[in-house]
Length: 166
Image (tube, rainbow, N blue to C red; front, side, top):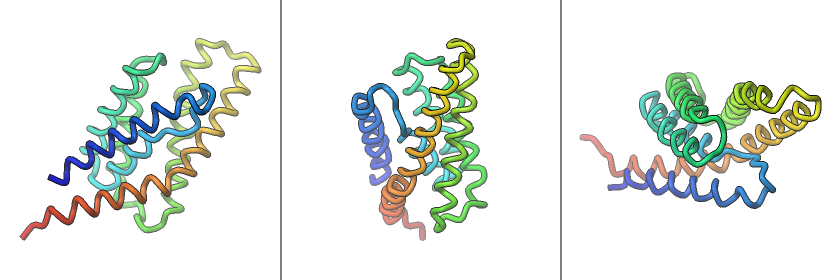
């Protein structure tokens, strides 16, 4: 029964992400669903990370005016990738988590630069504004890595208490 708490946590993440859109003047400087997908992939492996990434990606694609399919593809691959290398990541060293999320955020912004710069032109102003937003996006995700992963680790341990196998 405690496994349903993950759905509640995902709902809270989506509510916090969508309600924070108005607080930052149109520029969103963090990605809570990405941090949730990172944690699910880290805790449960590649298959769960892929499923969580595809679900969040579809919801983000439906709700955003951006290029449809981008979030679906990148979030699914991020969840699968983190789940695949979960054994290589030291779970008790949070510095690794911050660096991995920062690198993942930078990679996603580089991939997203292709359609943004293609549609917006390669003007000096567009590129500099995009680079500024990328820096703030990566820093925001890196700063929120510790609190989000600690909260989701507590949920993971709470759910694991009920799933005792004899």
